[in-house]
Amino acid sequence: MDGVHEFPIRLPRHAFTPRQVARPAEVWRAFQEAAVLASTECGWPPERYLAEQVAFVVTSMTAIHEREVRYGEELLLRTWLRDFRRDILTKREVRLVGPDGLVAATTQQWAHVGNVDGRMAPTRATPALMDAFTRRDDLGPVIGLPKIDEPVDGAEHTFTFSAWNTWMDPLGHANHPSYLDWCDEALARMAAAQGLDPQTVVPVAERIHWKAGVTAGDIVEVTSQVVGSIDGAWVLRHRMRGADGALYARATTVRRLDGLRP
Image 1 (spheres, rainbow, N blue to C red):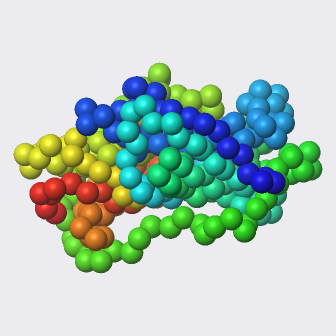
Image 2: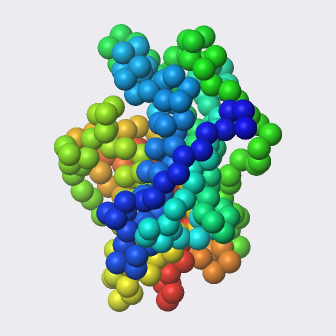
């Protein structure tokens, strides 16, 4: 199908929890791999972006999980670009499909950036890059979060950490799936504090909006709060800030966990 790229995949062993299911952020890493592989098929491998001093950075991402991934499953990544606005912003759709149908899906918003006075900033993509990618807006809806059934006002939970040097990606900041790991760690700590097993968490959906990137040595404060429920699953809102209070990202995660109360 024109503009659609497909890649078989098996998630690696380190992607799995003690329950033998993949962590949500590992599904996000598979989504990212689909974007890189599709770009490479279009003539834009990572090396070309580096040579031309341009890149795509994710600014927001919404995902849903129809079910968890089991170890050893043979899956298929399917991806395409939906649009390209002002030659800067583009939505990429990725679907993770198993033998029984859809496993997980995401809509990613990416921004094209280039070297402007020694720093990476939003810039218009070149005609060569624009011409390389086919856009398809006729292959299904944009992925969105379900609506909250019952709002609640849970207590805030905060934990703080220092970003490791060894976490940095090729652009020199924490890769975007790491932020989802931090959100899920927040819920795991909240569950453990109530005497519940953090390994019983089941992903339903999530969304993250980024304002800035975490770099090596940054002190990151993650503040999380239960704000409602959706069909028996808990909705949590998260803020990730620096030591100076500057916002790195805002997130919403929807998770099932038996026995958790706000």
